[in-house]
Length: 451
Image 1 (cartoon, one colour):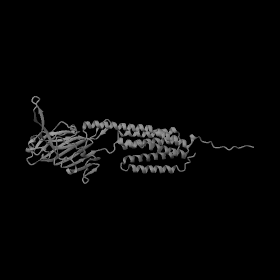
Image 2 (cartoon, rainbow, N blue to C red; image 1 turned 90 degrees about the vertical axis):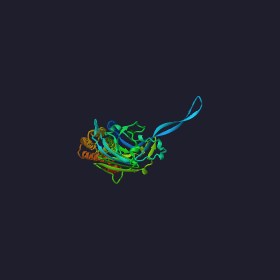
Image 3 (cartoon, rainbow, N blue to C red; image 1 turned 135 degrees about the vertical axis):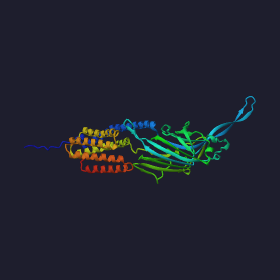
Image 4 (cartoon, one colour; image 1 turned 180 degrees about the vertical axis):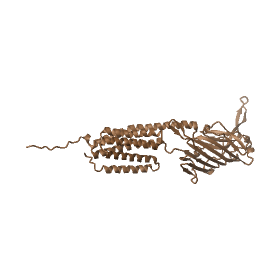
């Protein structure tokens, strides 16, 4: 009589269980954050190198343009009494010391029109930096200054030594001759000793104010051509200040203490137009000052010519989704492994993870020589094709690798859309992640996790 023994199925060890495999894949995902961290450092390093290049270019071409003025400057004599004691006789006498000080008056009317043209990119190695040339015209008028408010008597005024002063930045970036027409006469601006602010001072040669203002006021008109970058800003020193800026720059940012007029402001792919009108009632400083001009930087307004998102910002945003891409890709492979009963070795997971990391190095290197969109398409297609072909050899099938290729393509497309969005990035990202979670829950609902 033969005794038949019941053959019991071989029990799986802990390391063969789904739990152990999940732990190993999760640990590998965390380990792959190390090379992803180095990729983010590489992006940061290249971004800093670009900033250094931009600083080099702007130092040569021209930086931000800030304009403060024009201002009428009239010198006056002030006297200071002091005591002098004779050491031999012990008698004390009072003597007077005369010093020359200055009174400053802002214009009644100040109108500016500026035409800002984007210039050819200045290239340093592989980096480009866009700069501009600004043609600026100023005109307006000064009324007779009221020295009574300042407590200065008429006999102490030096009317024959009056001048018009402007304060501005980047004297070396001015590319035109600086002449101003004051009523019927022309004067030339010359550099003065700079004050302790960020501005440089330009002043005309002196003139006799009373002779020049026979009509009761002084009209002025002058133009300046600047090489600049980043921004153009003004201080509204006129009782009525109007500024009009036209440019072919397609991405302006209107900044400062005063907003551009909504009725005339326009922005398109061909450029922008903006107008400002500021009256003395809109700001809290006076029209006349003694001894020195005040610091009025808090009242600056104008436009910043920006690049909405440069290539390194886009690369940085893409790299922040690296953990999500690696985690979801490993999850797809793990679910396929659990459904198809195909064993995927941890080494194969590692190769897939490194291929995902290579996406970011390809992206940043290609972006530096082309557009971000083109680089993203090349890097994404390369990595998806590589992983899809590798999956065919792992899974011994074409159905699951095709699914993996489609899933990765959708994932990279989804991330690209989020990167391009600004106002709706969080909303779209949240909806997309919810849809991904719902899909994972649906496809994993029948898997027996106890095996």
